[in-house]
Image 1 (cartoon, rainbow, N blue to C red):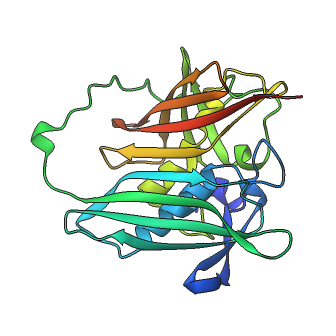
Image 2: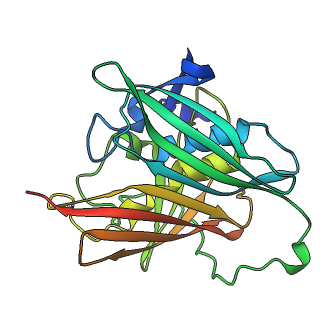
Image 3: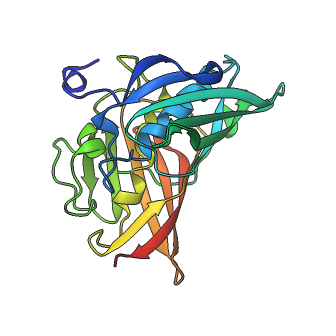
Amino acid sequence: MTLEQAAIDPYYLSAGSGEDGAERYRATESTVSVWAATMQHGAPPSALLGRAVERCAPRADARVARLTMEILGPIPVAEIDVRAWVERPGKRVEMVAAELVAARPDGSRRVVATARAWRIATSDTAAVASAGITPLPPISATAGVDPTIPSGWDGGYLKTVDLRTISGGRRVWVRPLTVVVDDEPMSPLVRTLAVADIANGVGAQLDPVDWTFLNTDLTVTLFRAPEGEWIGLDVQTSLGPDGIGTVATVLHDEQGPLGRALQTLEVRARD
């Protein structure tokens, strides 16, 4: 853990065992959403689900190629349980599932988010590897106020990331300044998931004072394993006429493009 990371709480602290063999974690203030202080930003839960997927029956000969998180309701800044299982085993292609469970105010428990991931056996295709996407410009030397993030959005999760803007379009380099669980190093997949959900904010076209535009999901596909601490986001937001939008993002690292992310938006005018 770096000195920068040591100054910021991890997203989650271990809190023992939950029900049905689940692992329990306590969400910290580092997870807080821009929409409400009582709910988590989408990035930390997606990273926690990705971590659970990777730790479930891990294989050295395979990696996660695609992970989709479905957000089933507000994820509280509280204790949550996570568990993962192999839903569809396979020698070359398998599906791993995971879920987050939180308590309702009356003490009963509900699933607040799920994930499904395709884990695919790797092979040597270096001779034919290609992306067909222009790499992002290099990372700027200094951080600054990101003009792509709506004004008034600060604190909570947004204090845990280092954003470097790129001129022209909705493009940024971003890295997490903390870790997902305790002081545990993050895998390349988990590090990517810890920032991918911020694309909705980077690509925002509406003023959050007048509109809400929460994403209901996050899909990340990786045709190449990420490298290094920085992830680049090249974001395109599309808004329809009937309250639905999409955020499509090309993901990069310092070696070049590596995958894509997609989010579905529920768009509403505030009363």
